[in-house]
Amino acid sequence: MTPSAVEAEFWRELKEIEAESIGWIPLDAGAYLHVGSGEAVIEVVGVAHASMASSNVLWVV
Image (cartoon, rainbow, N blue to C red; front, side, top):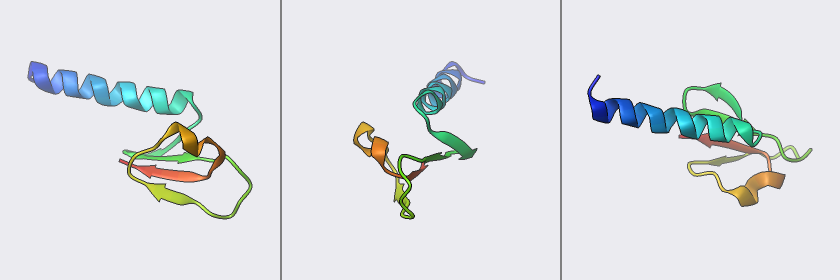
């Protein structure tokens, strides 16, 4: 692995750890679920924001 590939992998793993630490549930590589309410609606997003904390969000990266 090249140094730039190692660094890219490090940053990807760090983002995953950060997402899991604030309640995002990993579903598969690059897909996370955040359950913030009892509503039956799930918002699908490409970029997650802190303002989504009270929403049900499927984050696909």
